[in-house]
Figure: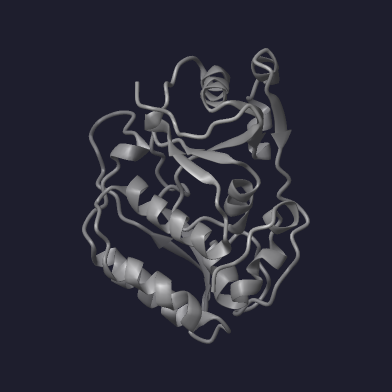
Length: 248
């Protein structure tokens, strides 16, 4: 089995997230609210989902940015095995972001570190690409949570058992989950291991100024960054729970 991350303690707060492309602000709030986040890429890749696409606000309304994926003939293709089809999409996505946000107050500041990622994509693996964006955005926001790949861990049991076992391997005493998991997560599996379950609340976000019409919360976090820059944590929840500082 692969060596576990260093500096584990018995007071770790852990979250488990699937790999998403340029996720919305709630994704990063959950990351910022824990000590360790596991990117669970051994799960089945789902089409027309957040794994390879997200939404931005554009002059003509909400717009999907989708990373094209080779369609595998294998049943149950995992997220970590999903291959990106070509590289033409990167230029297209950056042009869309440029068109949508070049009038935004912090366009130049964000473009300085974001544009090079799009102009020099060095992988054909979706999960690696997504992690590159996730790590870069966390770095800008000052989120220092440790990111662990699920491939580093032993994955056994059914859905709840598997997640609880992941938490045990990481020395967790608290598992923090999004509210959607309430419908299937068995909390007794965690309590039997001495792990509490905490449900993260995505409600009551404060609105910020957006371009292009009516306010919409569930767009890529890039919308917030372009519009608010170093003030972005003021419109997020992790800043009220931690003491990170945004990097200029």
